[in-house]
Length: 356
Ligand SMILES: Nc1ncnc2c1ncn2[C@@H]1O[C@H](COP(=O)(O)OP(=O)(O)OP(=O)(O)O)[C@@H](O)[C@H]1O
Ligand SMILES: [Mg+2]
Image (cartoon, rainbow, N blue to C red; front, top):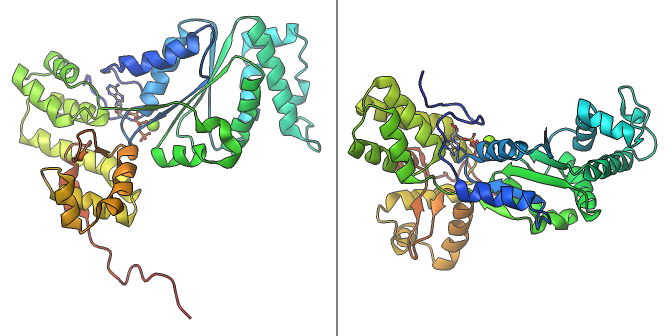
């Protein structure tokens, strides 16, 4: 069976560890006096946000003080949480012995009328107090968080629970724009300073060693392949997958690799960029040196015009700006894709505001 996977959001069999980032979250959440009860994992599509979140939860669960629940940001989150907790057999017993009457929250419940949210909040507070007494901690996971109504209501209650010193922890993932939007929501000041884990490329040496171990390639081919992925998680799986399938590193593998990246991720990333972002990205794709001064002169832009775009593209995880005066794409073969897909917006497609 092919050791590599093309599936998103599931822990892959071949996994390159993110030791530092995993440890940061786990050590903080496990400490006696946690300095943080929230972490936000962000990064470009296919960077491995969902996989990291799942991995952290799995590691925490090895210690049975942890109870983990995943919530959908588009549904009533408090209600789901209360119902998930009370339907857990072991927990239900704890709540019963603590004399928490949850009958109101059964099916066909009569909480209409007054403020049901605050009731849910109180129920949750009592549940968490009872968990605290038994030395347990609750980890709530939210994949692909965004500034939805359900999310805002939930975060609001969450911050109250944290203030009450209850053992509740939140691990979220999200694309830069969605997270930024949520963090800048005025009613959620508490999230504003929540620490972010920004996903960086996977270690190239570890990728090379993984390829060497699993594929019929030489050591130098394995290293060449690892460099070709630029450490981008999805690319690591795709290149490994096609090389294993075809039994050697050949042109057909490269062609499948490029096409798969484009169809499964780059097209999606592209549709999520504004026309201005695309123009900047096109400028970057045109200058193989990565030198900002060259890119700017190609685009006919001043530094102060270019900088905001540069920063945003870095935060989205599309370019890397670690080297002073330069920017580079973080995604393999992305420049080729951009050069082939960029079309200048014609005046007719964007007529601007109508005048009467
Ligand atoms: N640490 C890792 N080692 C190896 N492969 C990984 C790792 N993390 C993720 N992957 C692979 O990368 C791909 C994308 O992972 P994942 O679904 O976690 O991305 P994501 O950031 O959640 O993307 P999206 O924003 O689209 O939800 C999957 O094929 C997964 O198997
Ligand atoms: Mg995901």
